[in-house]
Image (cartoon, rainbow, N blue to C red; front, side):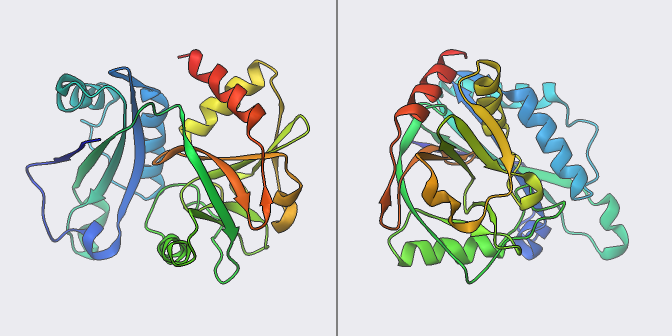
Length: 268
């Protein structure tokens, strides 16, 4: 699969994303050469920028991004892809920081289908670090905990890790949110627990709820409650959807989640 990159002409190599991690990220989705969930992702981008107190350019409209992706992605015959989109502040001194100009960069990763199950993953839990549960915990910003955990996972032959919040409850994984199915209930960690806001997950959960395929419960989930689950999936805006096949010595089924995800795909 090819990977395309887009960099604005006014790129400064010394910028606040490079120096301080002063940036926010979202993912847009292309399916069958069509931009899907564009409005939901756009509003999430605007909300993320407001939380990080960006001076949002008036040109950053939904139509602007639709036209941008039409020209730079769809017209290049990209059929199915995840667009990793980053907005960052250009270099500015502290006095001018509130009005610092913004720039953006995006990378296009072709996939077979952004709504399809991308594969299976094995997880474990990490206790050496935890993730916060505050205003900025729900958006994609610089997070040293993710970097530490990613290296820890690689060193231990794992695909991802369950990250806990300071209360020792499940917040999310390194790359996305975890959904736990037991009987007919899908439990999802609350955003106040440190879970990511995810347009991709929200679309799936809304579909499941509207079609009464399972009960949805936003919950406070204690660290080892995952072992009680029948099935677990990870939904990551940047990496797509994966079945959790194993946590430590316990293996998990995937039948019901697979059926729900297949029905959800057909709704697009």
